[in-house]
Length: 188
Image 1 (cartoon, rainbow, N blue to C red):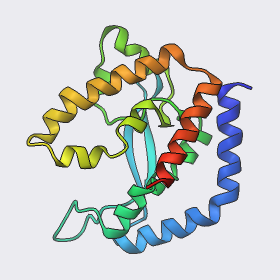
Image 2: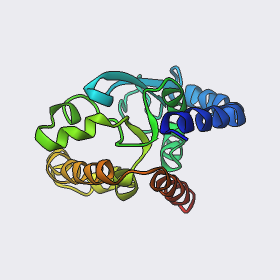
Image 3: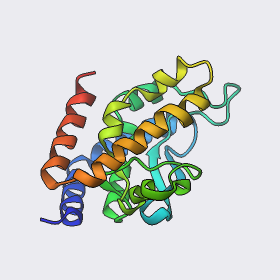
């Protein structure tokens, strides 16, 4: 079974089984953030093409504490439920279940040389790098200069891990990454 066929069928099954949950989470995010509960943002996809990613909103944008993650938002992020709407990105063919996590412009689209091979892959809901940096926000919060640490340590390691995936990817390898991701999320 091809990766695209697997992605499409698996995403469709999950959407059909859990659309009720997505609607409830969307309503909760809408009430919690006082906005439309769906957040959309440009990300870099396969071949460096921009696409619009979907997530549940976890940050209030019209309050005095602009930019603060809400209590509900923290829970959604902890269990990666804010990523649930990305199943629609998978159905649209913009993402896969496994592949490099899509980043904002200014990172993957600026890669050079061999590192650009990462752009041949569809971005994924999970990856080896996503497993390693599951608590990336907490790690960055501990740094004196979070942006420098992200750009010069975490991002470079993610590139290394994504290249490793590029050269060693397989259907069963993807299944292992998916299983490890689910186990990690629900072990918290």
